[in-house]
Length: 322
Image (cartoon, rainbow, N blue to C red; front, side):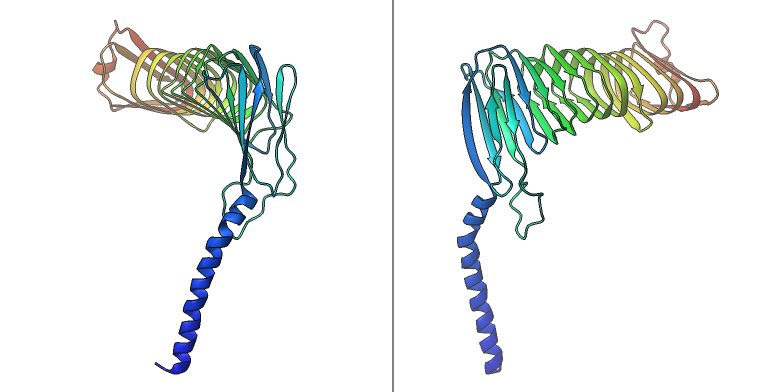
């Protein structure tokens, strides 16, 4: 190897070593520049609380029964974009946040620059209202056993491991999910882009406006949908009472169905892949379309069945398989 080649190779190795050392020394400072954390506690003994949420943040709202009349707020934020401010009034906790600059692509990725705010509520709060003058990007609710009213639009509202006496969504919104959650009453007054119920038990659920995409899996209750959209909706392993109305429905059903169901639509493309089961009668009908039966009809033709599922459409095909 030539001396000049050895020289440049040595210089390259030295630069790599010093570059690594420099990065190791500078990374904590850079991390601190983009992420800091702060925690506050607020005395709150009332049963009713309103959370006023700013849109440029990610919220997680949960409950800790060991908190005695105190609300705990933990905030991870980027000093580059500014620190959220929290104000408490008689019955409201308001999150104020004005971003200093729009998020930009960074040379090094240190995670989201949007503030991540965890609000932990005490057991004494029985009625919770969420509101905002804008649409929060992402809101997560977990481990709550309260009456909750959502009086704000949102891009994403994820709910898991909750037990609601009542859940009310008053404004049009994006994605709503109920995972491993119970609700005595669930009312959605306006449109949703996506709705997912998985391992959910809703004693009485009323969905008054259009839902473009529905995913219903391993859930139970009495559910009434006034209008499903023309995107694909799926239902798997349902138990209870189900009522669906739609102008144009693309539906796939799988697994088991126990209870009573009535699906009415003007136009439909429906595919049923139900497991053969006792005590289920399926009644598919299409006025100007086709009912394609590749299933063993005797498995779903019990006149004395305790469970019934009727699917009626004017136009379109219903494919019945097992």
